[in-house]
Structure formats: structure tokens, C-alpha cells
Length: 352
View 1 (cartoon, helix red, strand yellow):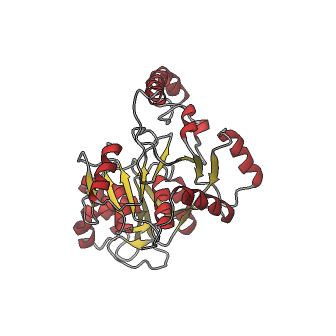
View 2 (cartoon, one colour):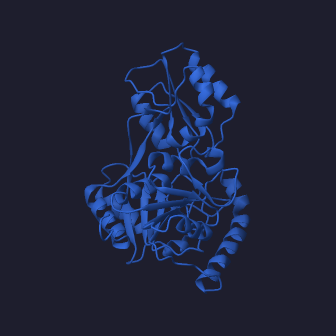
View 3 (cartoon, helix red, strand yellow):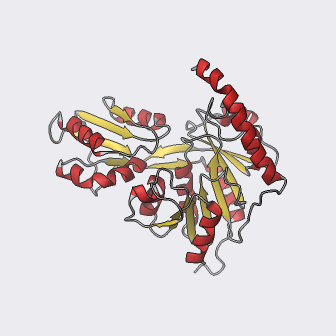
């Protein structure tokens, strides 16, 4: 692994130079960044995948939904379409991507759209629904054509940006100097009850300026629910399969193993588009122990990609049970974080 990183280092230098020149153009005003009248909150990261952006977007939706008309704009990673599309609850995951579909199905009243061009995407969203009061930009830190009112930079506890390196030697999409554009950094997937000494160590390593905020968040997993409406029942099945196609499955695997030590983890790459061959293989493995003695667990994101195989799964008496996950803060951090958000997103005047 170290040898491969050494070999990739010259490519990382070239990549870093190209990214630095692009950022220089924005910093000097040679490329324009547009700020909208509607508050825009950017949720992004420096590294590729596994930092908890979707749980953060969902946290913001829960925080704001009772008092604001919310729009969410995503690239729609992995979709087979291009351009701007509004996401509906019955959309095909191949058309809009797994994460935007997940958000729309969980929050039907939220306006969700996909567009690789974030500037055009926001403009078209506002043209369709002019009364939007806040727009959440998913995975938008590198998209500098839009200047957000508030920029949230996420990094994971197990692989923070300060211990990583640029692509392709590492997983960073921008050099560490880019963190100065963030208004707040959220370290995600922290262990619960993070000690004061550990928090202070992380604060020093983050190297933020006095104007920047630092938050520590954890993941909380909920009770599984049936993708097709089935009810989860407690028990000790002989066979438990945890199916994931996400960037960082380690926290979820630990959680599932606590409940089911015998669980087998079947892992695919992030956003993996399941085919009939994978689904058929999965059904055969679940049926090996006989009906009623197996359990298929998966993530909500993977569930979106399995919807296309509803007929095959139901005809085989197999229902995936999705494990919901929420981003959480301790009480003091939650108060501070929520106040920061509301300082940029004012409450509706007439509460209508």
C-alpha cells in the first residue's frame, strides 16, 4: 500500500496543482461565484465518500422543516441521466441516484432535484417553486460557482482530512488549504461520550481559524423497517446477511455484530448498482437455511437500489430490512449547531 502511494505521489502533485489553479481563479475573481437571495447551505467534504453527508442533510431537514419550505439539490451520483431533474417519490434510482431518492421518500414535502451544474440547478428549482426559503446543497464544497450563505465541511473521525492526502495517493479532492472556505467543520462518526481531552486534540489537529466553528457528531442507528412495508420482528435467525454498497460500512457492521454476532457482511463498492445476478445469489444464500430462519439487513441507500428488484424479492419471500441512521450531537453541541443554522436561515415571518 505504501509503495502504491509513493508511485501515485507525482500524480497527486499534478492533480493538486490543477485544483489549486482553479481555486486561484475563483479567489481572484476570474471565475464568478453567485450568491442567491435564498439562503443556501452547502454540505460537503474534502475526501471522497464516507463522511456522512446524507445524515447531515436529513438532520438539517428535520431541524428546518416545521418552519421553512426546503429544497435539496444533489448531483445524483451514479444516475444514468444528465442535466436537471426534479425527484419524485416514484422515480427510478437509475434516473436520479440513490441518495436523492432516499431523501424524497423520507421527506415527501421537500423539493428534491438533481443537477451536476449547481448554479443552473438552483435557478431552475427557484423557477419551479419560487417560495423556497432554504436550499441544501449536497456534496457541493468543490462547486464554487455557487457561494453558499453557510458552508459545512464534514470529515470522519476515523479518517480526518489532516491525516489524508490528495488523490490518487489518498482520498482528498482538494488540498488542506481549502478548509479556510468552510464556516464550520463537523467531525462525523465520533464515538459517543467523546472525552474533553480527545475533543481538544481533534480541535488542535483541525487547525481552524478563530471564525470557524468545530462540531463533533455521532451516528445513531434505529430499528430496521421493511423496504416493502413489512414489520421487523425480534428474534435470533440462523442466517443474517448485512448487505452494503456504501463508502464506509465499519460503524454499521459493528452495530449489527452487537445484535447478531453471526451476521455475514456482503460488501460492494459505494453506489454499486445491483444486477439480477447479485440479487439471485443473495436470495439463494438466504434460502439455504430455509424459510423463516434468515434476515436480510441493509442500508436505506442500498434499499433504494433494491427497489428495482421488488418483484423478484417478494416472489421469493425475501424482504430487505433497512437500518435507518441519524446524525446526533450531545446537548451542548446541538444547541450551538442549531443556533448557527438559524442565524443563517431566519424563521418564516408569518409562520404560514
